[in-house]
Amino acid sequence: MADAEKVIIIGSGPAAWTAAIYAARANLEPLVFEGAITEENSTAGTLPLGQLNLTTEVENYPGFPAGNLEAYLDDAIDADIRAMMSPHAKEGVSGPELMQLMRQQAKNFGTRVITEDVVSVDFGRHPFQLTASDEKTYAALAVIVATGARANYLGLPSEAAFKNRGVSACAVCDGALPRFRNRPLVVIGGGDSAVEEADYLSKFASTVYMIHRRDELRASKIMAQRALDNPKIEVLWSRTLTEVLGDEAAGVTGVRLASTKGEADLEKEASGVFLAIGHTPNTAFLGGQLELTEKKYVRWTRPGRTETSVEGVFASGDVADDYYRQAVTAAGTGCMAALDAERWLAAKGFH
Ligand SMILES: Cc1cc2nc3c(=O)[nH]c(=O)nc-3n(C[C@H](O)[C@H](O)[C@H](O)COP(=O)(O)OP(=O)(O)OC[C@H]3O[C@@H](n4cnc5c(N)ncnc54)[C@H](O)[C@@H]3O)c2cc1C
Image 1 (cartoon, rainbow, N blue to C red):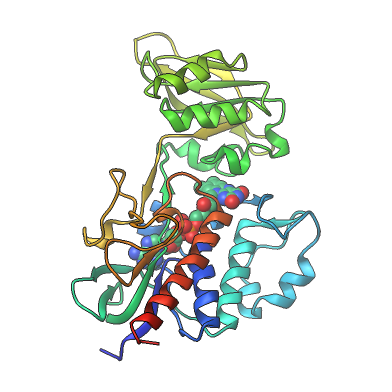
Image 2: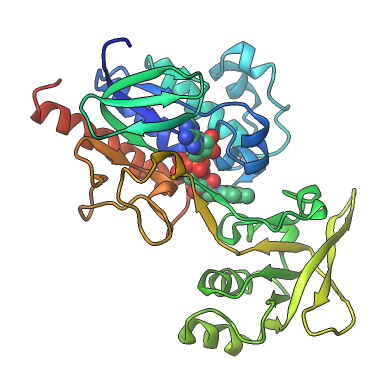
């Protein structure tokens, strides 16, 4: 095993790259594990570059107003990577473009990147030990966990076929896109976040159908009432989504719903289907060595800081945040984690 790294960052979304930019500029020479390119990660939605790499337009990340970025992308990103990217298609920045820009920025300051998963950790001794999918073990004085969370989908083939063409798992991210305006939309789920998504979408949609498999919402009373009181939200009780309907040109055009009470199938016209059936944080590889919340997110142990239950291990982004779940907030806590790590290393005399 080589000498211990000053800081190892695990993940490859906005949190990880921001942490890397700050750590690199503080001379911590960060090593990033960006995840492995495997069939398993592809199916799970955890390929390198994170959740934004799975989407199209990003209209709410500051600094990228509508405009043609073609020349900037050509200039900013290493030619070999740029040659593999899809052509810049629209005004403003796309998720994959934004992620490549962040990765490039981190690399420009000397960040080293390994395209492997971290599969297990030993935080019981210091330097911390991390084992990667290349079966090598790496040592680190400080670790930043930025492995994100993945949105849960139902797993229907038609749902996968229309991802980014009407099927989404993030109303705040996608709800304001032109294709959803003044159109009927569907939200799948019955918990608090489903109500939040439906309520948010009702600002843009003509009608929001909430599809719930039971005859009562799982959401808290106050949230359920908010849905029931909203004239633009119609709850379709005891129904499950069996197929997303659509075509090549238009994307999503409707949904087919089965009944959990033996009634006939129902079809509804809709331009969008928003999944609100929860997220799964990518924390299994931690093997219980960091304290997690009930929903299995990493627990930040000090308010306003990125510290975890193990001194010297910090967490940033969606892996520790089940509330905001935005690229800019992930980047924000990535910055915080790098500063927290740097200060901790300095206080311990490691740096
Ligand atoms: C469809 C969709 C559209 C969205 N649109 C927007 C939007 O328009 N604007 C916005 O602000 N937000 C949007 N979001 C939310 C945004 O993508 C997330 O909030 C953000 O990406 C979280 O960043 P993160 O750095 O925490 O981690 P993630 O983006 O979740 O990335 C973490 C990555 O780390 C890697 N990883 C995981 N485990 C390991 C491991 N063990 N070892 C090594 N690497 C690992 C994986 O590659 C994983 O994908 C969208 C989300 C979705 C699903």
